[in-house]
Image (cartoon, rainbow, N blue to C red; front, side, top):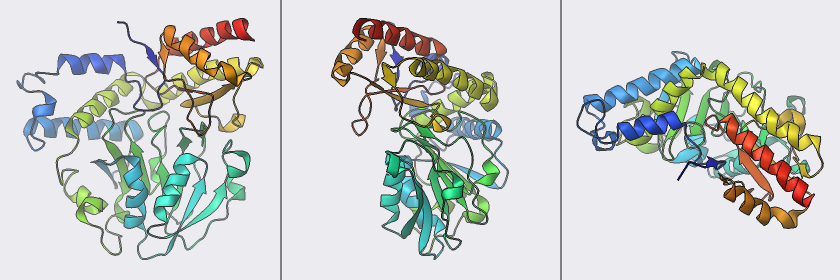
Length: 360
């Protein structure tokens, strides 16, 4: 069977070159006689894999030397708790920007540890825009300022970096990390689940500035303490070894794509093809403010919602899957991460044209 165009929001499509290399190395990595899945995480072979992955990620994102890169587990969801546990430093509150379902989840978890101040929200318009910073009402006494750079479900993306002054800026970058250049030095903490733009589910990337390590009061349990993970080189316990290996292959693939500047150009071109088609007619609609539209997740609705199931059925027959929108939003959603080829976007648009001719 030929590969489909997989528009899943995550776990998501991976580069075919990465999958081929992983298949070739499945039972024997570089003449070691072992699969990566069989290696000791403390053996020289896997240590080399992990070190290369970190070095390539640092190069791609231009991560300054005074930041630690951690390969952790638990997904971004665990980070909703780890961030306040480690960064409150005895303070009672932290600032949050609410732009959708993932922001709401982060705020909910923060309530177990502090008072999350919602300093801006787009809930008034159904989470269809990113609030302008002039509207934010930050608290200078907050421990940190948290926002979600791309809302996977609603398709809202920040195309700018917030100013946070002396307050550490914290970002859930799960669904647009590595899709464009980012000035890491403007952040105190970046975290991202891997299953969108990096690799398999099970790995979480954390990038944290050195001066924010060891600030938890009281000190968190070892597995919840960034400093303990940093001191142990992300190997306090057995890390998700195979996921780190695949992430390393993706990082290397990205370097071959022109790095983050190169992949951003491709992502912009891909998203424009789809948005331009949606905007040109009246049969499909995208609800997000144009300046805040995500390049990674494109939700759209049909003017005739009763045709949704037929649309999905036809798309699957044409080799396109996972286009159903999230249950909280409805309609369709095309997730077009780094590894989605432009051919996938063009195939989707051609199908949408044919469907509109038939049912419009």
